[in-house]
Length: 71
Image (cartoon, rainbow, N blue to C red; front, side, top):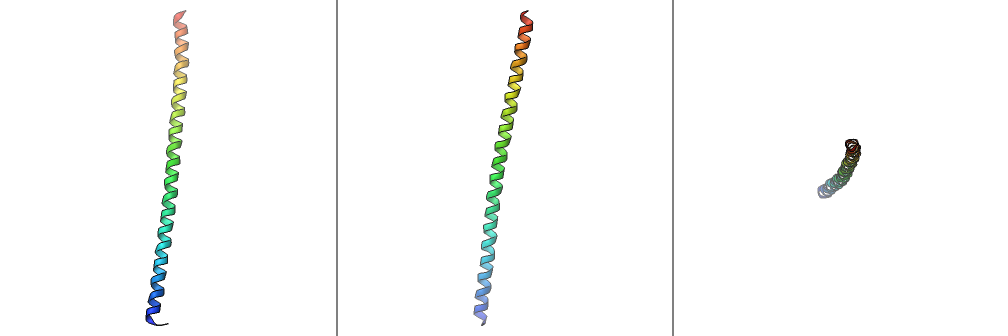
């Protein structure tokens, strides 16, 4: 092999290396983005459930105290 063909092979190998590296980076970035989105939805859902439970508890106690005060 002459000097130019060795350089071409080396250049192609470097380009393939960086192509794979970028592809893996984009894949991991997309997976991380999806995980963050799922986490945000999970937190929102949990906050909504807690708020609904709090409201039910307040309504329950409000009815209880209103019933006591009427007697």
